[in-house]
Structures are given as structure tokens and as C-alpha cells.
Length: 149
Image: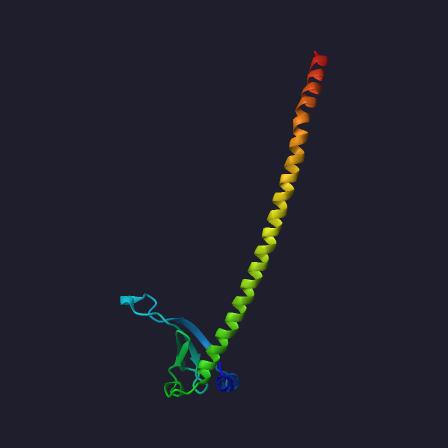
């Protein structure tokens, strides 16, 4: 984003927030993918002047378009700015979630490796003891058994 684009974005976003413009919903155009038509994500955004009116902001690649008058005239409107902000915030949350998942997976892998090591060590120790115990147990048991009859 260039400095000029950032300035336009920030001004439009400020207008959207000041005027109470909200994202009301989101979806995908042509959800059934009829006849191989392309699918594009879209958001419905409230009008600042008429609460019963909504505009559709559609994403095609990295480009957003809006059905409002300003958007149709090529002006960077508050509706596009609000959706752009939403996409930025969502992307940051997803990145943070992915980092947290990766960290959790690393911790789980380390715990699994430690548990496997502990189990191998325990089994090696137990195996050594197991070789001697059956002989002692059998001798003890046999002696006790013989002594009772």
C-alpha cells in the first residue's frame, strides 16, 4: 500500500467508524458454482444514511469493488475501507492462531519425544528386572507350594 493509498484508506475507515457503518454479512457469489462461473467472496455493508440499505463489496483477487455510488465512480469508499480493515484484522488473527498452533504442536512433539524416551528407558530397566524376577518368583512359589502339601 502506497502512502497515498494508506491516507485514503485511513480517511475512509475513519468515516465508516464515525458514521456507524457495519459489515452485516458475508458470502460467496455463485455458491453452487453453476455452469463453471467464478466464485468471489463478498460482504454486505450497511449504508450510513439508510439503515435498511446495504452495499455489496466484492473481492476479485486483491481488488475490492463496491456497489455504492462512490465505489461505482472509482472513489475509495468507506465500505471498501471497512472490508479492507476486516481482512487485515482477520489475516493477523489467523497468523497469530497459526503461530499458536505451531507452538502447541512443537510442545506436544517435545512431550511425545520425552514420553517415548521415558518409556524406552523404563522398558529397558523393566526388561532387565523381568529376566530375574520370574526365576525368583518361581523358586519362591515352588518352595511355598511344596511346604504346604
